Amino acid sequence: MKKIILLLLGLILIISSCNIKQGHPEKTTGKYVLVIHGGAGTILKKNMTSKKEKLYLEKLSQVIDSGEYILKNGGSALDAVTKCITIMENSPLFNAGKGSVFNADGKNEMDASIMDGSNLMAGAVACVQNIKNPILAARAVMEHSKHILIVSKGAEIFAKSQGLVIKPSSYFFTESRWKSYLRVKKKIEEGEKHGTVGAVALDTQGNLAAGTSTGGMTYKMPGRVGDSPIIGAGTYADNSTCAVSCTGHGEYFIKNVVAYDIGALMKYTQVSLKEAANYVILDKLKKQHAEGGVIAVDKFGNFTMTFNTSGMYRGYVTSDGFKGVKIYNKNFRNED
Ligand code: ASP
Image (tube, rainbow, N blue to C red):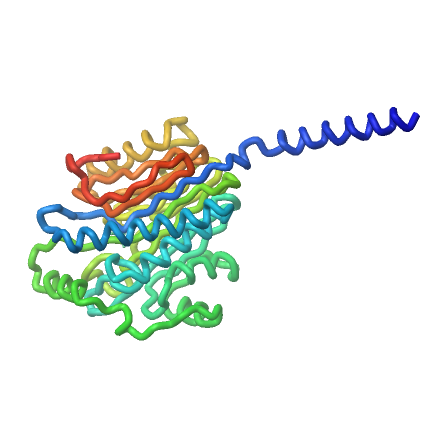
């Protein structure tokens, strides 16, 4: 009798452990993917010094390594995205955080957003001038407020109440952005009008996340808000489709709802991530003469870095061993 009871108990244990495994077939892929961008635009090799090129490639590699460390150790896509963007915001090389471009009044006004694909929670800030890391403020809005987008002084006050670091305007100043500002002010044609940083990730739990942070466009009207803090335009993540972060001429990304459009195309027409991104960036936006690009990863770990400009600072790493950082578009068309 005892033996039969033990046998039955054993059987129940085996069956229930099978059920646990079968209960989350898509949730535990064990696979991770991380893709970052540092802005798309007129980035030509002939205009780049080898020293500057090295600086960018080294920084992109450092960002990828830091994000991968989190994902490799079972950390969340959200944490990896936050970390990558924070590092790029702290670098004067990119148009986000320190190194942001100047608006028409000669001031920095920054935008950022973040989205968690596992629950569609999102947070964003816009037109902030003194928050050291706007992406951390966006995440605080998502996690510690009832709102999604908080702007200007209200966002600064909220960030302060969350213990985030506030910096004087002088912290965000960089000589090269100031020169760009003066050039645009004089209406002289110049190449680097915009830029942005972003990251998307799939973690080992099968969760997706996306984030974007920017100083916007040089000489923009004070108070202008681009696509980067707009959920659906510059950033979107949904575990059922993909995570997307955009860079480019914000007004076009807003009216084409680019980040959401890519996921929606996948959902409603069953096209692949790459097909959806190619259609939106290389066809739809190109026809509107709208410059820019996206990085995106889908729930299976497929990723794309699609842009219609001469360059996009970018990097990627996957648990399958793919890793790289790139700047240019060799054929001045989609290169990946
Ligand atoms: N999308 C950003 C904006 O319009 C700029 C950029 O990504 O280059 O504010």
